[in-house]
Amino acid sequence: MATAITNPTEFEYAGGTVAREQVSLWRDGLRRLRRNRLALTAGIYLILLVVVGLISLVWTPYNPNRIGTCETYALPGGGHPLGCDDLGRDSLSRLMVGTQVSLAVGVATSVIVLLVGVVVGLVAGYFRGPVDAAFSLLINIFYGVPPLLVAVALYVLLGAGLVNIIIAISATVWMDMARLTRGQALSIREREFIEAARAGGARAGKIVFGHILPNALGPIIVQATFVIPVAILTAAFLSFLGFGVPPPRADWGGMANEGLPSLQGGFDPYILLWPALALSITLLAFNFFGDGLRDAFDPRQKR
Amino acid sequence: MRGTLIYIGQRLVLIVFTVLVVSFGVFFIVHLLPGNAFVSDRVHGQALQILLHEYGLDQPIPVQYWNWLTGIVLHGSLGVSLYIRGLPITPLVLRELSVSAMLGGAALIITIGLGVTFGVLAAVRQNSWVDYLLTTIAVIGYSVPSFVIASLGILIFGQWLNNLTNGVIYYPEPWTGTYGTLAELSVPAIALGFYTSGQITRITRAAMLDVIQQDYIRTARAKGLVDRVVVLRHALRNALVPVTSILGPTVISIIVGSVVIENIFGIPGLGKEFVESIFQHDYNVTVGVFTIYAVLIGVANLGVDLIYTVIDPRIRY
Image 1: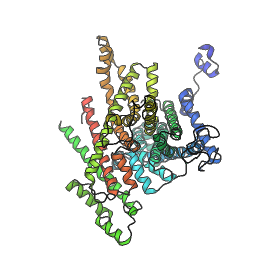
Image 2: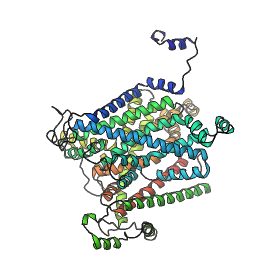
Image 3: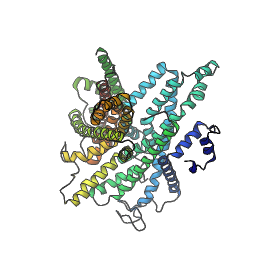
Image 4: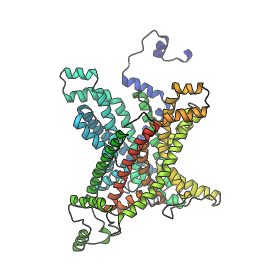
């Protein structure tokens, strides 16, 4: 091994002459993340995906919504590398634009869930008693209904639109975050440093957000990354069932839905294949990346 | 034993409470929706008022809910359909429930069978190519949406193999009868079960690895038991405890997935009915399906908690 050492700090560490450099929790986690090749590859793919999404805001090979860009059901080839759909719209352009919806739904839902779940969890875990009982009952009730159906009902109630999809999905996936944060708060509030803070006269708000939250942040962030693929999957299910962003705007679930008849008819599987592939790879990447984050920042938790 | 009965009683009270809250919530939401079931009939003015009155839709929502609730409790009736006017919902929904239950049951068997088998194999051959292959399949399983698997199934069995074998292997689609044949059931059930099997593989593998390191396994090996007996009788039983804990979420996943799968394959189950009832403004059906799902999930979770006590006698309530 000694021949392979090129990094001076590693050398010193290996030699045992110098104590290991003091690193913060975050830098330590980042280093562990960088060593995980699978998670790193997934991360690079996700960055590329964001870039594609940004590019598609200003440029796509063809107008994604223009009907008759080429022949209907045109197979991949020529000026249209991924072919065209049942209305003669360029599949590559639509696939690129579809990135926006998936990313927007994933990230926005994750942020909403983070805010709602953390606040509910912290309040329930810190104040305990009747507050906790009320929130726990609410969480249990939400666990008692199939999430997709609630999302459909909310979507129909609120009306079509990207923001409403995000709200509908957030309403069905916030419970895990709340439960996790509540558990963390319950255990951290018993530790000595919280007692010390209380003895020092800190108010509840300062204790909850200044002392408990920072110490619970690792698992919370990991959970937030796992919300993203769940939200993207739910959004794809919704639009696959016909409750997606209103047409003609392209999104992967809706594209798959439009491609289903031509697959079942047996004449053009590609219309469905591309969005299905894009969705699958993206969800895989988010799951791998989330796994890597968990191993890096939350090493005590085992699954 | 008495403790268990009290526990079951408490849980049943909670289920009833949850179902009441959920059904009222959904009742409230669907009645807030724009439009009504009679829009497509172009009924206006007084004719519409008469129709609304006939179905009790002109009353305040709490009153309507109370009528609906007493209908269930007193007559076991979920009301009548507004789309196919006057058709009693209960027998319709119960038939669809049996179709969905057949599909979901098949998917559950596939999920547990695949998941536990893969998990055990991966754990026994830890860090070999078997392990890597099976864990990769598991991650693919819970990353790829079920409608993608379903589409692949249609493509492979309905078209490629059909063309290759000149129609010897042929996957018929959509369903022709109410219940479908075994062949018709196969592809939807696999598509539905594959997603959740990934999570079960993961948990089984982790639990098996945990158990295998324990002393009593070494003792069992030391006294000369064959590997198969050690793994299946000694290790697997204890590894199944954490696996049981995700059976509840698994059932919910299968219910959610069945909504999508039933719509792809044209299976006349609850999930298809749910989506249709939303599009048709058939409020009573929507509420009925929702309520059945809430009961189903409550009972499934209770069942899982009781299975715990069977698998691990240390757990008591």
